[in-house]
Length: 127
Image (cartoon, rainbow, N blue to C red; front, side, top):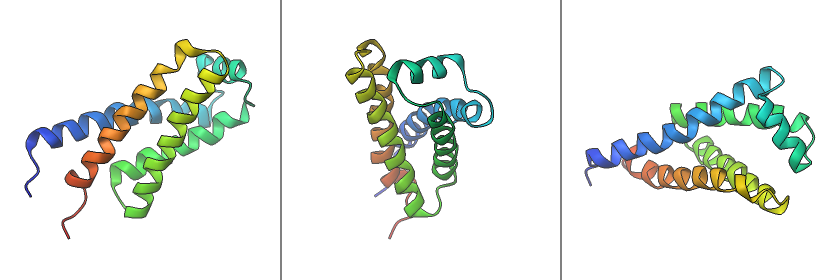
């Protein structure tokens, strides 16, 4: 079945809309002391600051794997990792009483879901 141009555009839009901010924040989280908003968010949610470096590395590796699209098993793991990240962030905000910030990671999760569904059609080689 042919992949329509609209599906390709939607796939790349949603994928880049999720990956660019994620990897973009992952770089300072890994190599610097992180953005002030991230530090404040971790403190508000009660998480240790070293978690920022772990998630920063995971974001960078996940974004790289999704853009390179190889190997296929790593692509699945990257999507799963971002799913855990976004749903975990949503739940953390809700459970910590910070409901005002919960919609942002949930919207990112929703866009990631669209990217994953379209990934099967757009990026996977035909069998």
